[in-house]
Amino acid sequence: MSYDSVRDDLARRAPDLTIIEAEQSTATVIEAAQALGVVPGQIAKTLALRVNERVVLLVARGDARLDNQKTKAALGGKPRMLDAEQTLAATGHPVGGVCPFGLPAPLPIYCDISLRAFATVFPAAGSLNTSVEIAPDRLAALLDAQWVDVCSLPAHS
Image (tube, rainbow, N blue to C red):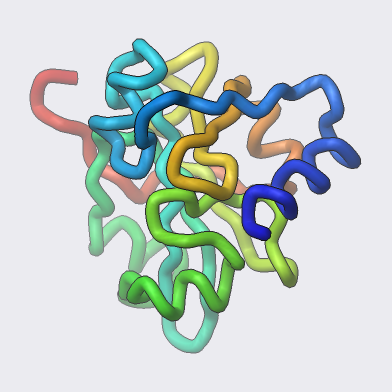
């Protein structure tokens, strides 16, 4: 069902995008990077967060870490990760396939500026082995997402 909602959403809003189905799991950043032959930073992980009373999605590069101070300043409260059950309820997607497409109801979506380091990134597509290749600016435009600076990068970046 989750994959179907993503497929239908992309067919309607971005029919030129092709869903990539990997032979192996893409459920973690490392697995996705290996399966797609890219660096972990190019994996666009989608985090489901509760900030005060609102649920929001944050799309960030795979090797970035959420910075609580930056997030609190940008989003107006301390971020708390949703658990697997809450994430599924909010997004319709299982952990490992969470993405900002095909949501059951609109949610505020933010894209971290860390994504802009790459020409294309790979968010999940609703299942544990699917993803989509897309330019970061197009991703944000397609999602009507707001750009924020809420992550810190690994020392080697």
